[in-house]
Length: 474
Ligand SMILES: *Cc1c(COP(=O)(O)O)cnc(C)c1O
Image (cartoon, rainbow, N blue to C red; front, side):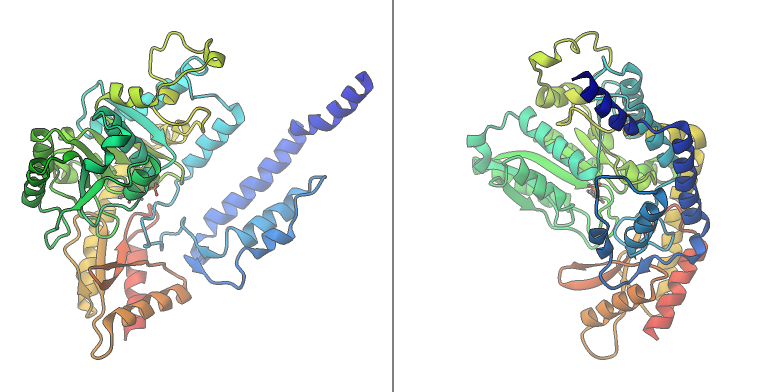
C-alpha cells in the first residue's frame, strides 16, 4: 500500500507546480494579457467568423497536460476573438463596463491564497473587507450605519436576494401568494420577474404602472393602484423602482415612490444595477434623491465601477431581515459559530463557499482611489450628451434627453418601414465591427441604443461611432 501511495503522490504533486513552472506560466499569461491590452487599437469590438469558438470541441481534455502555448492559442482564437469584445471602448451595446486591470490582480491573489470568506471564523479580515465595501456603498446611498448587504455575482442575484428578503420580512406564506401585489414599470429589468418565479411567487399579481414620456413611473397612478388593490382585499407588498433603466437610463421618481411605499407599508426596492455608481459624483447625486427611503438597493460594481464581470451587490437597510432569510446552520458548522463580530456572507446570502469577490473591488479602489472612477463616470455622462446632440445633426431622431449615459435614437427613412431600416443599421455596424451597438423595442418602436459605460470609451470612440453611423446611413 505504501508503494501505491508513493506512486500516487508522485503524480498528484503535479498539482503544485514548481517555481520554474510557475514563472514560465506567469510569463506566458502576462505576455498574453499585455498583448491583449497594448494591441488595443487593432481590436475590433465585434468580430464575425464562421463557426465561432467551434474548435474548442476539437481541443480535448486529455490524460496528460499540454504545454501552455497551444492552450493560450486555443483561448485566443476561440474565446477572445470572435463576436463581442467587452473590453473595447467601442462597446456601446447593452450595459458595457470594460473590466479594469486591477480586477485581475485581486482575483489572482484571491485564487492563490484561496481564503474562505463565507464565514467570519475562517477569514475575519476578508469578511470585514467585504463588509467595509458594503458599508462604503451603503454610505453612498444614504443608508444608516446598521445597514449591510452582500456582494453577489451580479445584479440578478442581488435582486433575487432582495425580493426573497422582502417576501419573508412581509410574512408572505405560500398560500398568500395569489393575493400579493407587486408594482413596477414595463422598463424594470426582466430579472425581477425571473426572480419572482424562482422563489415561487410567479402567481403573485404584477401591476405595471404607466410611465411618462421619459419612461419614468407615474407615481400618482402607483398610489391610486395601491389603494384600489387594498380596497379590493389584496395585499400590496412590494414596489420596484429603477435608478437607471437598461433601455434608456431613466430614473424613476425615487423619493415620491419612497413616500408612497412608507405610507402603504410596502417593501421598497431600487434596482440601481446600472446607475447606482453615478451617486459617487456630487454633480449627479441629486438625481437619486430618495434612495434613503428604500429598503433595499441593487448596485453592480461590474457595471458602474468598471470591474470585470462577476461582482454585484445588494444593500439592505434592515440587516436583520436579510439575516432572517438566509441564516441556517448545521452540525458540521458547529466550530464556525463563534465570535461573529461582523456578519458572515453565508448568513446573508444563499451561498456558502464562494469566490472572495471583495478583494478585486477593494484592491482596485485602494490602488487607484475613488477620484478616477468618479471622473470616468462624469465623463461618460457628458459623452452621452455630446452624442445625443451630434447624432441629431446627422438627421437621426432621438428619444428623451439622457438622464445618465444611455441614449436611444433611430433613423426615419423617406420611405419604407423605419423599424426594418434601423435593424439594417445595427447589422451594418456589426459587420463593420469597429464599434458595437445593440437595440431595443419600446412600445413597438425599434430604437438603437447608445450606452456609454466602458471606462475605455472617450471622445475618440464616440466620434468614431458618429463617423460610422454617418457613413452607414447616408
Ligand atoms: C444589468 C442589469 C441587471 C442584471 O444584472 P446582472 O449583473 O447582469 O445580473 C439588473 N438590473 C439592471 C437595471 C441592469 O442594468
